[in-house]
Image (cartoon, rainbow, N blue to C red):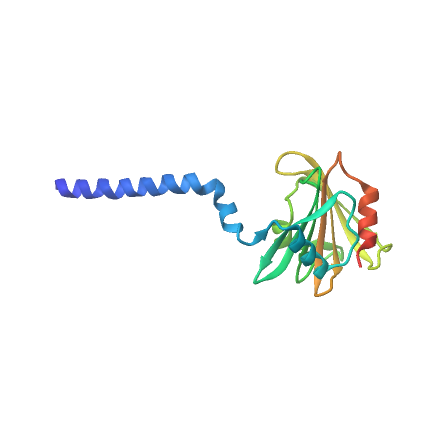
Length: 189
């Protein structure tokens, strides 16, 4: 009987150590899992982005990160040099916008989950941008990000060089530069 108590206590002790280890790693687990796929290399990010779309880089923005999947650039982050949380996100997708029963475009649920930053308390508006080289439906969202910062996000789709591309521009409401955004969207080709 005494050896059974020692065995049970030993197993529970090992489980406790494992649980403590998992709890200690949990905050870093997402970063650990994703680290090999995201590369922080401006040159690689610029090459990947320009394989997706041609555009004129806005002032004070720099291609900063690329997501590589099977050796191909699948997504790129173009960040503001002063406010890196203000960014342009470009990603290859199968379908950017899918029609709803009302005929209005709606974001696919998986894109809403995997986009640059989830919005809380978002209000959305539609607009059409026919000034760029490609007619595009723009979706403007206003809300707060995970840090309670008030932000705006423009989401649209373009026909890229090798498939459809989701493009999202995210910036704080206090740093939102509509002229820069209009110029960038018009430069996409």
